[in-house]
Amino acid sequence: MPKIGIIGCGFWAGYQVAAWKELPIEIVAVCDPNLEKAQTLADKFGIEKVYSDARIMFLNEALDFVDIITSPETHADMVFLAAKYGVPMICQKPMATDWETAVTMVEVCKQKQLPFFIHENFRWQSSMLRVKELLDADTIGKPFKARVFFNSTFPVLQFQPNLAQLSEMIIADLGVHLFDLVRFFFGEAHLLFCRTQKIGEGFVGENVANTFIETKSGVHCYVELSWASHVEYDCFPQTLLYIEGEKGSIKLEKDFKLSIMKPDGIQQETVPVPDYEWLHPDYKASQAALVACNHDILEAMQGKKLSGNAAELNLKTLRLVYAAYESARDGKVVYF
Image (cartoon, rainbow, N blue to C red; front, side, top):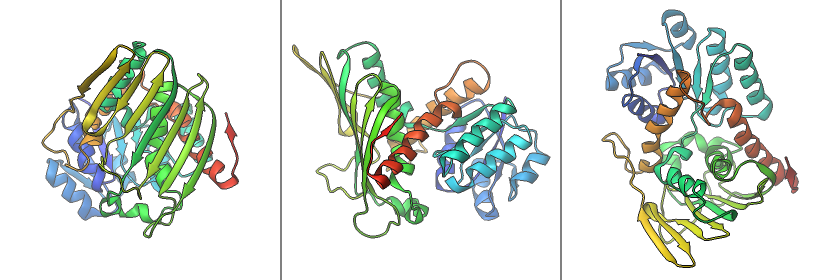
């Protein structure tokens, strides 16, 4: 049974660890500079070893891999440290706070032949897997236009107060997920144009962003992100979709209601979401996907399959993030 270590014991770590507990692994140690946080997480899940220094954990423990669940500005240091001790790793998104560092992280792990994955879980939501299945089955023919949107006034700072101080906020934190969905559904980008806004108080960085992406397959994608939208039905944390194809359209609405619209009529279904007793009611959609994402990465770590969550592939998603900031800053179209 693989033995893993956890680095970072904040809000999200509790759910990440709970998801790991659904799989055949053993969490042998947790680590956080705040020892009280680390001890609290260890006590909750019956984990024996607790550290405040990741270097000491690497020296003392025989780990098959580590899961890095820290804030973005620490990701590079933790990945380089794990690489130094020859331990494969999983890292939260966004991979790094700048493009050059992310490329270096991937290159270091590649040189050392160490598996390196980014925990990008939106593509593992059951509703997104169902949409992908329909697209792959040619249910609506060749897609030509899509809207991927996440608009809400959910008080995200209540649970993740660190977001308030980020100069690059909603695209880096949330947009990375939706950009990955664009790649997952439609392939790689040909061009991108983005505009951002800061609405209201409480955020240093942008809390609204709208991005147009044209894929190499010819799909026109509109990606909408907002923490300032007063909508009829606030669906947090659900991502909604409207995809148009040559033979029909797919619509994913609130509470995972999926409609397939074709000339001969409309088919509707509700996509079931896996239920676990540890899910936070406000984060159910995204947290339920953690188990499927972890399972995929675990199998890839064990050499059983390839994974779309490989860091080298995730660079393509992260490139969209920094291209969006470049586009918004300079008012230009970015080509790939």
